[in-house]
Image (cartoon, rainbow, N blue to C red; front, side, top):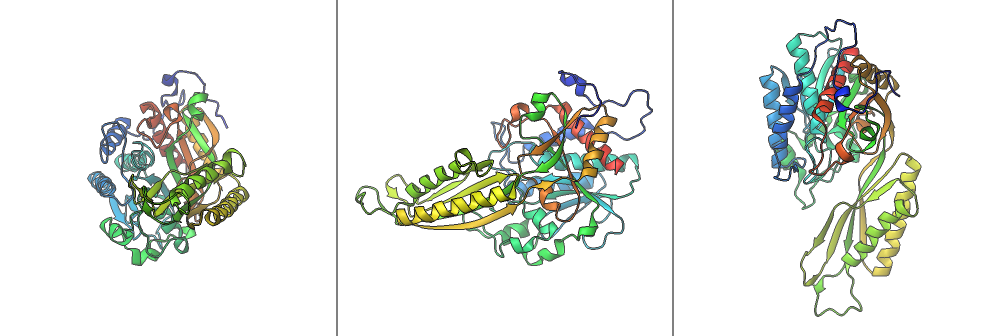
Amino acid sequence: MRNPATRSGGIADHAVRRPHGTADTVPHVDGARLLRRIDRFSRIGGAEDGGVTRMGFSEADREARARLVSEARAAGLETSVDAGGNVFISRSTVRPKSPARPRILIGSHLDTVANGGRLDGAYGVLAGLEVLQCLAESGTVTGCDVVVVAFANEEGALFPQPFWGSMVLAGRLDALPSEPRDHAGRPLREALALAGGDLSDLASAVWAPDSVVGYLELHVEQGPVLERLGLPIGVVDSITGRTQLTVEVTGVAGHAGTSPMEGRRDPLVAAAEAVLSVERLAREDRLCRVATVGWLEVTANSPNTIPGCVRFSVDIRDSDSAGLAAAEQALRATLADLAERREVRIAIEVAVRTDRVRTDPRLRQEIAAAAADLGLACEAMPSGAGHDAQVVADIAPVGMIFVPSVDGVSHVPAERTAPEHLTAGAEVLLRTVLRL
């Protein structure tokens, strides 16, 4: 998908511009205001190296949520928090069960991974706020109510229940643990209450399938494709499937100096083998596109002690549901064999399963048309990262807009996108909302 806008290698050629020879009365976003907000929010949980640690339901996450509510209210907008901890912003009261008018939902998430980037998630929320504020300030009348959402705990970095907020909204309550806990065993119930939610009332936060006509999510690409093509806008056609597991390996703790090598039941050695087997799923066996162990916890984490327990995450991704299932089945068989050989106990818990999702054809068409209205070239492309959009797809048509990531990096302090591309993405989001 490429619109007829002129392509060129210079960034300046991708600045937002009105179609030639037309009188453009459509409102425009305030790019400078958007960039200032992104900068302000990057300081919440920010480190000197530019990284941001704002894990879901942490103190920094609560601070960011409070700032979002404060800025929305200062702009004359209504805010609310549902039982799942999702923050909503609108020009009128949000009613999950029986909306008075059709609704368009736009947004993303504010939480980050540990020492992650400043744009992943937050950009989509703040661009959504900018779009809604722009509509309110210009007095633009829309056929649908526009609602901005900041989904809770998309990353699952602290509490290992990724897509928490969108799963609650979409009604996937049976897939969530009844008493979720973080990696240290602390209960989510209390942290959720501090964020304005209520674990005992999640059903009140579920949206009916007919309650929203579409969901739009603006995001940085997190990959190199758009930058390599020299294009400012990506129109996402599909979102990768993902299975995330938490594996616990239990052995026998002991003294590092007095325990003979023969007879040891070392869970860390078993875990090391398991990590390599995860890599083999994708690198050698080609059962899935990618497979990653990104988090590992050793107890006791002492240099002169044989550990007693090791816990680690497994993240498997593929565009094919059969591939995901085959990779998980192969890993489970490998871990069962490993447990027997190493005389350790291995328990596997499913944190999340999401199938590949195709975005809505009409929304893709409207996004591309919005880009064309602005003279911006675009490309149809898949998303290798997971997003709340693939969960919201349970109840509504979904569309996603990408902007380029410098050097294709994300989830790290070096995550960056050119300011003009950030503004262009927000303009495309605004135009898409108006076209709908």
